[in-house]
Length: 115
Length: 112
Image (cartoon, rainbow over all chains, first blue to last red; front, side):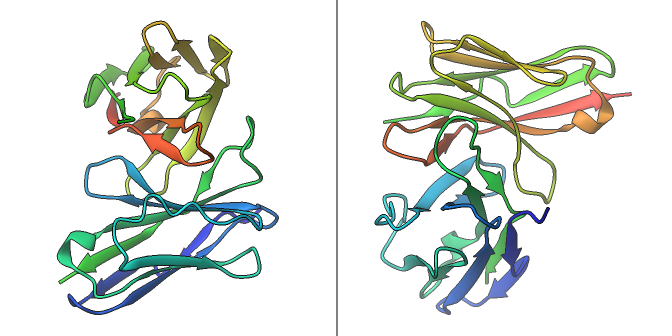
């Protein structure tokens, strides 16, 4: 079946511009996550949505970052007034739940480059 | 703070040999641990997971071992193949919800 889909796959923008990154989770998955991966590094948690609960925003690095999930499905991560240190691969994952045996499945990410 | 790290940044093995990738974690309250494989330009791919009340779990050609006494996790790959070449990440699930805390990764290189 279809996996997690992210768009665009690559995004180049100028410093100070706003960007929107999109994630389409696996159909039926109630949990959705955003992570950031800098070059040669591990993944850094950003935000997590689970069903109708309030999202866990504890990983967002600044108030320039925000995310929403509409209708319990598609999610958009928005970065306002981008800075060069925002350059990274932004990965989205989804899972059918948060229990054992319900692992997070990742998309291939959006590679964001800030000039 | 919480952290998950790997002992070796790179590992080179001969095709057919067994590979062992190690990971140390610091949060004794984490309830489960996961291994991912990431190929260049791709997102992490789930390999195997293990609950904190387990010591060992086996999958196809892979085994994960958990030693809670020393907070150590390892991934064993049997009969390593060129297709196993990738970066391997361990991650722990925070007891504060579904978010994962990832280690830095180990790059596995398989020589034919």
